Image (cartoon, rainbow, N blue to C red; front, side, top):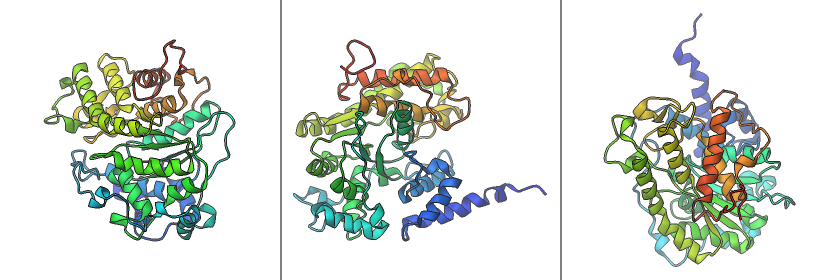
Length: 406
């Protein structure tokens, strides 16, 4: 008997319904997470083989978002560009009950009541090969890089220690995560100090973030101050945002609208939007804050495409050209298939100051299709290093062009 379309999708909706409870009920059990990992391996964003409640919730949001019409507005997709910010951010200090003001032991105890003593602090032994222990926040623009970055590192000969607290859209922004972890403002009295507990009670070398609309320096400096209190040598990496269709007066009816000059302009607009924030942070924390130039990389990729130099890529944006293998897949600007590799290469090149072109081993991206091809993958590596070495805020220079930072 043939299976109807509705019945084929029934198991998916059952699991989505189960995962939907994560945002409103007690944390899921270890057994539940293991079951979901088997059914949805892509939910394991950092590729460590362990599914967290946050990763499951993020994946649930992504599935629900992907099922909406392609012309759905930005608000529907969970990414408002304008929103109110609690005026507590204007005060000289956070509320006295903010978790970040408590001792490491107290912070751990708060989180242990939610996840258990064993899981309250994540730590890694100090690597002897230059590997950095990294914590991070982020949203769906960071998720592709968080997924591929550890896989790229593994092919480079080491396991990447990475511990993240992510969310979809605004829920993955640095401001939102600080409020959530501290139990202040919109989360008053309901702290979830996932990262704060581990930062205060373990050793870390770096932190990563993704940018968001209406960002302010103080949304980042609070994290920096807390990290440096317990790990003074830490460095901080902010991924910038690539060109998005909302920068245009209207969505073009045809991809013929786009030229290299237009992408160059859109890229400069995005960069200008974050220069003030980043320069303020760099002035306050010299040699501590760096950009992971994903915007430069995507602008370069767009130019390569227009010149016919991205084999297998069929379009610029799926909602305009209706091609699945496009650089971007929606109005907001989520990356198209394959481009998660490019973002991961940018992360790798910035943090480890080496060109991914130097990686000799095959990288297991867990995608057994023939796309991206080996030729396209090599172009991604080249673009990533060009973007990183050419950005003044990445901290990477390669004057002798040997693929290793000076």
